[in-house]
Length: 247
Image (cartoon, rainbow, N blue to C red; front, side, top):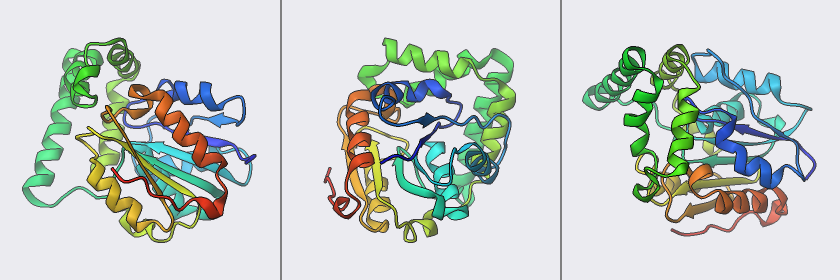
């Protein structure tokens, strides 16, 4: 496998969310982490990934919102993607009715908190639900707060808009033909293992990996396990990528 690896961050995350994987995989593969800047749609973010991708073909892993961006890349230019990994993510659009209204209100309340009290105050409230309970108030959690504090309310607003207007990515799944890994934390309350089971069942030949003792921030909570899963995915024979690891 000699293609570069695009590592797509999630909501308000930067390159720090992939540092353990770059350290683990970097000696053997060129890693590129795109920046969405103030782009405010999933499609615009996917177009940015395609512009920043070196070469005609690349492998791609997306975490959380980055997984949604990765699926939009698959819709726009599937011929360029040699391998795909989807981590702690989903496919559904904003729900109709009360459920969708509740999500919108919750996101806008966080944005208001970021604007009035600062990014770290917002992150301190929001990020506690991201991680396994035992990872709260630890150096890992502090690194997440530090990362979120490096962003700004303007970027938060742009990415919230992108998520509230996110496309339904489910139709993309059955058309994926490259070796694909679907991975999430066992205790991911935002993007559940059951959700990932459904996603993996709809992608021909996808491998499913459930990471134990782990919440939504799998790349930082269980970096070694995630790096091992990505290494296996990167260098597996294409015809062998059919094993499903049951939770």
